[in-house]
Image 1 (cartoon, rainbow, N blue to C red):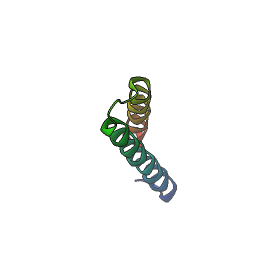
Image 2 (tube, rainbow, N blue to C red):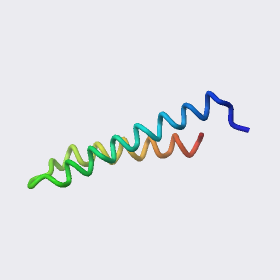
Image 3 (tube, rainbow, N blue to C red):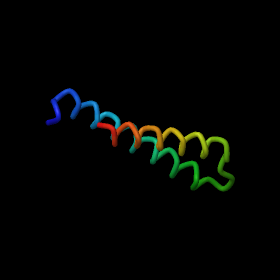
Image 4 (cartoon, rainbow, N blue to C red):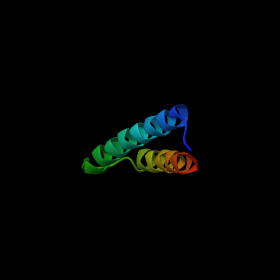
Length: 55
């Protein structure tokens, strides 16, 4: 059973993930997206997703 602390932690991770998604979407909408920035944002999102899955 998830504790309140772990639930709060997962919610914080999900919030960070959503923020990275928004930044990635903004970067991709630019006329000339910075490929290095896009790659970094995607990697950070993946790490957060993996951590969320671990709970």
